[in-house]
Structures are given as C-alpha cells and as structure tokens.
Length: 72
Image (tube, rainbow, N blue to C red; front, side, top):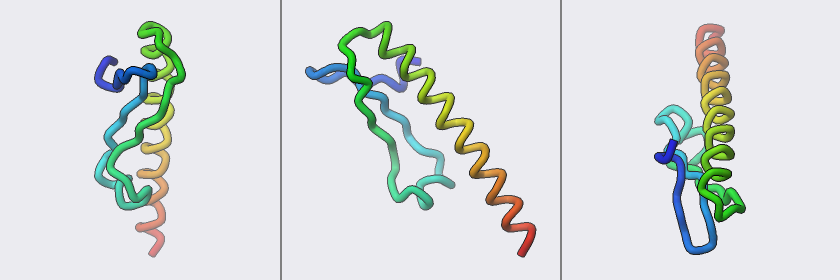
C-alpha cells in the first residue's frame, strides 16, 4: 500500500500511475491527490479506498470500451 503514498512537508498525498489505456482518455500520466492528513495510518486507509475506487472505474471503462468497439 505504501506505493500509493507520497509524503510532503504539508502531509500525505495519494499518487497513482494510470494504466496506459486511461492515459489517453484522461490526458495525464498519474493522479496526485492530497489526503489532507499528516497521520500515516489514516493516509494508508484513505489511499487504499481511493486506489480500489480507481481500479474499479478503470475496469468499467475498459469493459465499456470493448463493448463500444465490438458494436462498430
């Protein structure tokens, strides 16, 4: 889980490198988001939730892209 954490003097940030198929859609290579905490324990919990949500969204987008491609 610590792979998603980035520590700066102001606190912890969530950092996630996007899969290649999402980079073109979103126009960026990674997502960096402030977790608004200086507590490592709380940051790990928040980062796990955000990472899980992003992975589920990526799976849904990937599935809808496959369906859309097969309809053409």
